[in-house]
Amino acid sequence: RYAAPRGPVHVRDLAWWTGLTMREAKRGIELAAETGALVPVEISDAALWVDPELLGSPLGEIVPAWHLLPSFDEHLLGYTDREAQLDPQHFERIVPGRNGMFLATVVSSGRVVGTWKRSPRKNGGLEITPFPDERIDTEALAPEAARWAEFHGREDIPLAVAGEHAAAPAKLRDPGARAGGPLG
Image (cartoon, rainbow, N blue to C red; front, side, top):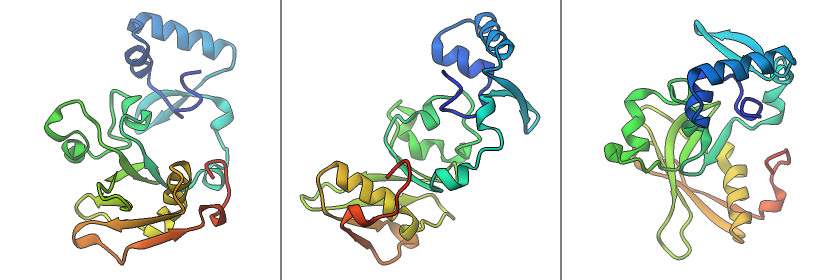
C-alpha cells in the first residue's frame, strides 16, 4: 500500500514513514516482493521498489505534467531523500527558515519549480512564485487552477506569476470547461 501511490520507494523511506525499524521495513519489502506486490528497480544507482503495475504504464497520458500541490503534500514529505523532486538548493524556499512548515508547491514533470499561495485579497487568485531560472507555464497550470477554483466554489480565478518570470496573468473561467482526466 505504501509504494503504489508513490512510485519507486527506498526501504529507508518505508521505515521512516511508518516508524518501523530498517530490519522490519526490509522484511516487509521482502514479503511484498515474494507475493509479487513489489519488484526491484534501479534508478540513479539506487535500489528501489515499485508496484509492478506502474512499470511501463502510460503515466504521461494519465497524469498532467503540471500540478499545484498543497502544503505538506507527500510528494515531498513521503521521502527522506527529496533530491528526485526538489533541488536541495531550493529547500529553504519550500521550508523557510527550516521551521518545519512546508509551503504549497508548483510541480512540473515531477520536479518542484516554485511555490504558490492564495492571494490574501477577497477576490484574489493564486500567486505563483517560481524558483530562480524556472519558467511557469500558466496555460499548462490552468486546469489545475480551475480544479482548485471549483473546489473552493469559485468560477473566476486569476493566476499570477510573481517577479521577473511573470507573464500576463491568466484569468480562468468556467472550470467545467477544462480538459478531463483523473484529476479533473
